[in-house]
Every structure is written in C-alpha cells, then in structure tokens.
Amino acid sequence: MDLFIRFPDQSQSFTAGVEYGRLYGRMEAGHESVTNNGFPVRVENKDLLKVTCQKFGYACSFGAEYFGEWIEFTAFKIQTSKN
Image (cartoon, rainbow, N blue to C red; front, side):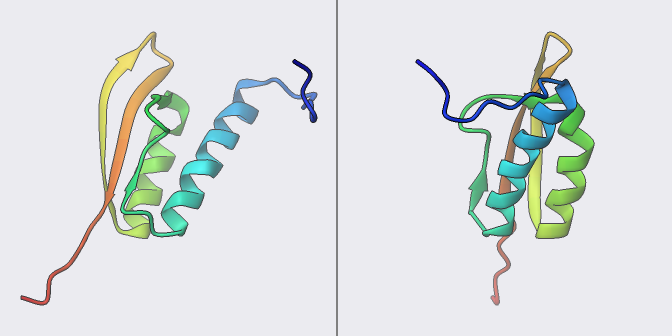
C-alpha cells in the first residue's frame, strides 16, 4: 500500500511531536478522557503531557513503561460540582 504523503524526517523528535499534537488537540477540544487510542505514549512526551494536563484541567495517570521508550497514559477531565 502506498502512502499519499511521505514525511522525509523519520527522527524520534518528529514522531514524538506528532503524537503529542494529537493528544493536545483532544485536550484542547475538552474530551472527557484522553488516551493514545489504547497505545502507550513515548517517554519523551511524559513531562510535556503532565504540564498540558495541568493547563487544561486534566488529571493524568502514567502506568507501565515498555523498553524504556513507551509508557501507558490516560487523562481525565476534572469535573467540578456545584454541590
């Protein structure tokens, strides 16, 4: 299968940036929960995701780490009650 668009930059930083951008977009849109579609995220994005969660009002959780490169990630929108 041929790709429509091929990116010439195959560096780790490019891939980490694309992954973060998708997650950032979900938080910016106010999704109730944010994950990487069931896949772990790159360890390089952990600190950036923590800060982003704080800015957008999410509680984040990081789980198991795989091969020193990937880590499980889930974030939930913090809901406040008027009660």
